[in-house]
Length: 301
Image 1 (spheres, rainbow, N blue to C red):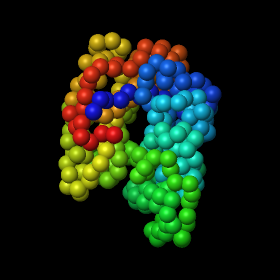
Image 2: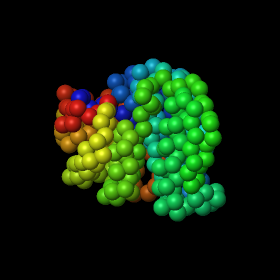
Image 3: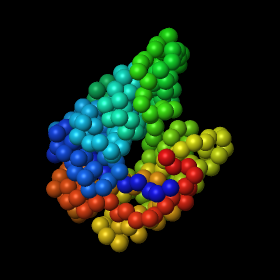
Image 4: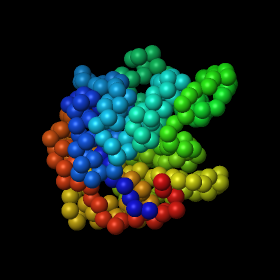
């Protein structure tokens, strides 16, 4: 299966504007990228503009026709899963079945958790994530659904319409490697979005190790069907970028997400925002496309 290429940008700072993100997404589609994905944050630990990711994704859906879209990743523990179910099915319909849902327990920054009276304990958030995913799947099924968990309760709920996509909107689960619990969680769903360090960019051997682990977990539980493996990194246009992407495809990646980070510009500082013009220039250069194929051609969607 040929690897796909997407663009991955924040939803804050100069990207904290729905119109600006929609324009970038349209430019990405015109330049031949396969996907456009944004972050899901509602606060940062420094003063900055933010845009609600679901409002932004609605604008992106209306500005594009072909690229897959989504937020990577949405921390379910700070969302109401029933409200989230309404949002993602509505967006799936608005986009004509192009939505991917990225799920995680969220980062540990207090600005989005303790400062807003949300649950800060990671172990609790992990349990809320598992319950939230179960509720989300049930409510998006289009069938009458009940659930009795520790954190969420649903009684005889029927949410219509069903999603455009079948059997469900794809769910990619994120987690930090080498933590094994989130990788085991990802193996139960439709894709894994591994994060390796402060900037999320892992080396090839780290990526290969995490891919091997998650595929072993899928085999152990008897999981089948399409499964995406996402890598976010930085590529150069031309032959160098093509070779780099091909190496990750050979290691099992089904998606490469282009991700400009401050480190690229010699700035190791989260408060320095990704230059929009640098991102636009990279988008217009197009993806590092070749005939690179995943070594797990039977598993990706």
